[in-house]
Length: 347
Image 1 (cartoon, rainbow, N blue to C red):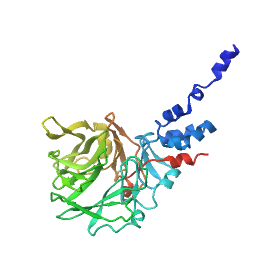
Image 2: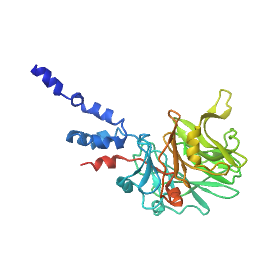
Image 3: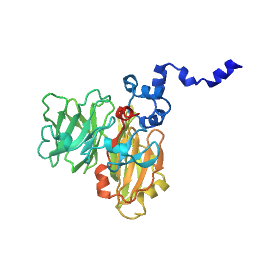
């Protein structure tokens, strides 16, 4: 009987070797680990150990889609959160450009000790290694106008400088967002006026135009990469009115024919929420993504919806009020992921 009582009081977790405990906990989002630390001193020590930190990688549910320095959409909780800790991670001024996971936000202050961006150019993208063993990154800048030229800069270079790369092979009105391939070797860019998909080779510095026809009537479009595939989300416009919002995946068949396969359409009730009663008039939304989770934002009416590419689910998020639309648009589109610095602050 005494043995049975002892067995009943034994925690199976404590019987696991520490390396298995580390492996199991490393699968959780960092934000879910914070309450775990309150369980015991042993768990706090584990969560703060370098061996555990080496196992961590960005978690798709650990992203915070910024709306301001202190306000963010949190996909894990399906809520808009005000977090004091977020302010410590956010830059003091709004980001100019940000990287895919792992997150890095580039502001004017970030560029202070780098060579000036080439005349007439702006930052298109920033690319960081999939595992940030060093603080280096690659910046991509492009010029505007009839002839679009590109430049790159490696911040890890002892004497960083902007290198002139290839010219864009098309004449376009504007460039849309850029999505980084999973191997970090290529940048997919949305061209507008006319609509086109562009690919920039980060190794050779050359551009190409993949042979794919863009969806007809496309408006307010956004590219994103998930699970090795390129996706496109955007509205379909007819006679100046957005009729539906669709997600496509770029497919290539056995005959090397490229095409956009429709994989999801925003349900009517979600579309109506995002539309906010603006039927019969032109409207647009902004988009931000991280690891297959896409947030669409109607800043004028404070409406947010979310799409998860892992299961095709659409979710209506809480409405926003009292948030300056122009200010929030300066922050929206950028995503933060908490890192080990959150765990190091545990007491």
